[in-house]
Length: 188
Image 1 (tube, rainbow, N blue to C red):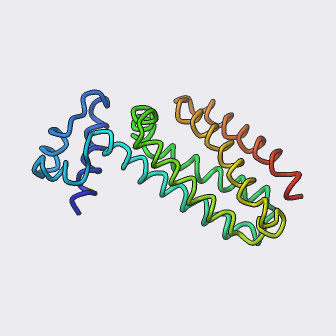
Image 2 (tube, rainbow, N blue to C red; image 1 turned 180 degrees about the horizontal axis):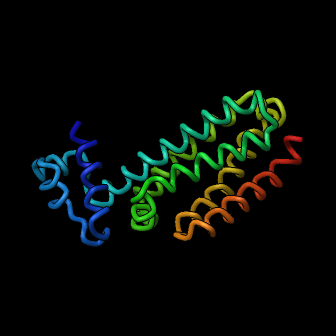
């Protein structure tokens, strides 16, 4: 598929040079597609970068939702939450160019739209989990889940800005502690 080729090529180019050097012409040339095809799918370089953000956040959201769907019925909620955080942090860490793309796009409208859509979808998936729905009640579940996600996103932003693995491990531990403390009154 052309869109995937364009996105994969963008990742390749970002692995070779910085985001400021990235152009749609370079992407088209390396992907062996006409420049018009790039603009057919993406109005700008920022939209290509936002699509890369969306690709990674979709992977993370699916993994987090799957972890919690499987773990919450069989594990204490704290362990399920910690596992989901580890999976999330692991995906972000394994995506070599995500932090670069995230830094380059986080101020643009396309990035904000991708993140908001991602958050809305994840909140809906998590709010539907039986344990959360039962313990929080229908009137509170979305608010509590969205608030927890905002807390998590703040820590994820911090992780993405931190290249040192030791410091990233400390930030991940702090994220687990903060989310556990926030959720404990509602879930215990």
